[in-house]
Length: 101
Image (cartoon, rainbow, N blue to C red):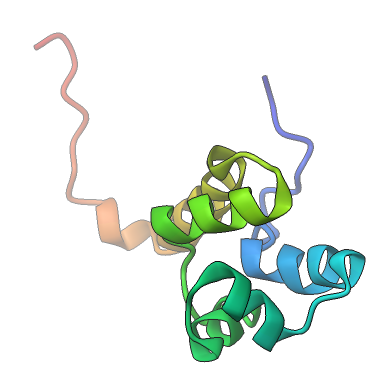
């Protein structure tokens, strides 16, 4: 199945989804979400501003808080991570495809 997302545009970081959509809907501040998740306010702030990647541990915490699956949060992070590394095609030019081995 092909994605409808523009491949030239970086996928939305899961922290941005939390900041723009989830927190306002839940009417929670950064401090309140940090307390509920059992993490520091700095951790939450860095995640919300896409300065920190979403870890599996944080995906489970956010999933429990929001009633969503940790896998959905991790898929968002994986999309961002893959897009980021694929922006430098020279990084992988030395790798030759192994065909028929």
